[in-house]
Length: 342
Figure 1 (tube, rainbow, N blue to C red):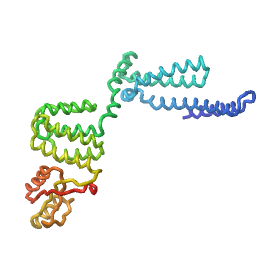
Figure 2 (figure 1 turned 180 degrees about the vertical axis):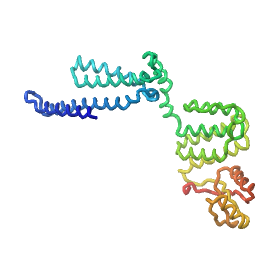
Figure 3 (figure 1 turned 120 degrees about the vertical axis):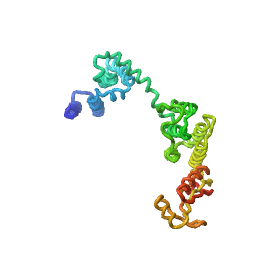
Figure 4 (figure 1 turned 90 degrees about the horizontal axis):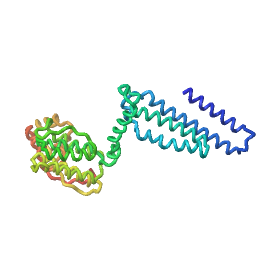
């Protein structure tokens, strides 16, 4: 930082000299303006130094090298040289000439770092070859920002949902893989290689439901969310066979998305509420130990535990079946839900 203080000291001396000059025809305003311009030049020099100083220590890091746009760095020459020549030859504006020199210096440093010239593994490799490699890499990555801008919010989770949905029937079809790859390529999302047949990991329906809810919690655009319904249906029908598991998942997720889209509009929606009805005190204690987060409520059938509300009757019945297998009486009933209160 001592160098910066020296530059500021020089600038203060310049100010004193300019303002104290009696032999000049410059007005006080013109002197002040000259000072401000010279100050801008000094600060440009300081800015250039700080910019280079921050990255100079990391110039041998390949990741740092790859993070610099070589095209943007080289454009610094395209812009800097004409301004430098104009300032020196035509306008004789030496302040602008000095600023152009600083810009050209920065362009040189960032071009060298951006090509990987200082990276240890590139020692002995010619500059032109390094430049070609950097330009090739930038060409591959040039559309990344645009892809991030045009792909829908939560695109990564949409692909994850499609992948897990494809494996829900314990068999991934070729047509399902093609559909996943179609959208992953369109949105520029890397996916692991998928092979037709038995998946390496069987999809857990509850986990998949949680993933869909996680996607909706990100507040995606309603049009995109409605489009996900079409994608889910396409995935289920891709192999021309809709299994029981796929049908149940499609019905539940379609209801979840419909609820999300309709929530702001208000109104009512039919859902299926699952309840556990304990048969005696022993089952009452068993439910409390199994599901301590549930609260017991009074209902027309007596005291019951409300498990949750679901959009699909088949999904609700599947939840009931899980508790029935544990020896607990469970049932589902259709209820009207006020979306404004949800």
